[in-house]
Image (cartoon, rainbow, N blue to C red; front, side):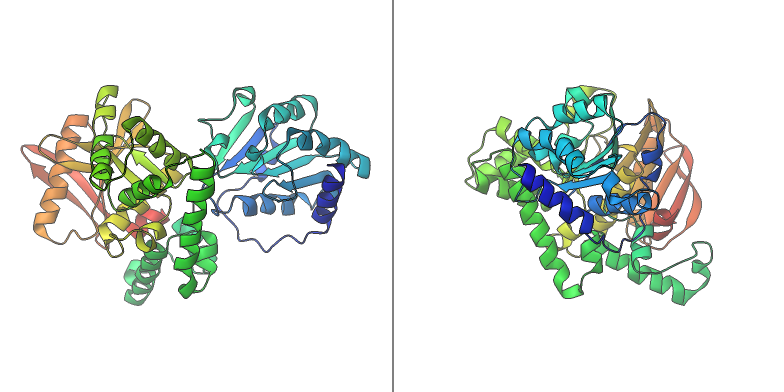
Length: 434
């Protein structure tokens, strides 16, 4: 094992770091924490976690040498999936170099048994600052092993924000002036449509248009195979794949309805197993779901959940239903952005089938209600969306009401059922660039 480590470290010292686009996530501050923590970088496959780490390494190399920094990717097929490999890393590195090891970057380390116990020993017994990344929820704050509790900080990485998307394309728009130029607005809306249809995974953005769908499908297949089937040792693969197809083609689900749909398609699965499968899908970061807003846990469990996906390209190129459903694409983008902004979000509904897309909660208070409507020019559509907002506003005692739409901006005073509220309407592009 020592020889494998020596070979990999020698290759690391000679490795040319790739050209890196600036992201909004900056790890440099984490590298200077007065009280060091293990920094855990989590997120879906191919969102740019490794490149964000490389960006930090480039900055560190202005003060450090390659001897001071170790980088290991545990998806390297030469690395044995054995705890013994971990225990040999630091001693071998010290053996081949007289320089002090200051930083340790470890990619997909969760594949190695007892990785967390080894990491705790390194953290407790050395001054090495550790950054780890992974596309498995084993690395997240929900599942991080007990021995690392209190010793780590999680940095969540999402696909590119719209600001980052524009930066990758070397485009700049002034939010305050673009509305005064029809040509600039048309250009911006055209770019927004690309963002909506092809999503914001870095490699896909930078690839040729004809290859984008193929790359997205390969990401999907890898996630299903490696992060769900292999990780959880799923034997009933065809049922899992059928479940994923149902989820991609729906906006809301309940376990009972999914169970009945699968049963009608001749897929045998128990409800408990089905719940496990849904958890595995969310743990891969491919999908996330929102419960109905209620102060009663029973309601959150009983009512259907709304489901969203980590990137729009999976809706337009893998799903069979939403390729041109801009309302669905708008809503999915808003859901991702709210998650990126670390908001605690739910949806609201009542027995009269009125629904509000997003309830934003801070601690115990509802801070904002958000409705997403692609085209609000139709009077009946506008009535439906505002009626639901006002009903939720009255019930939840929240006056911060927002409608996100295609290209309409106004503040209106709405009066329904004796309830008068100010509603702000804003174009999606402007909300994303705020």
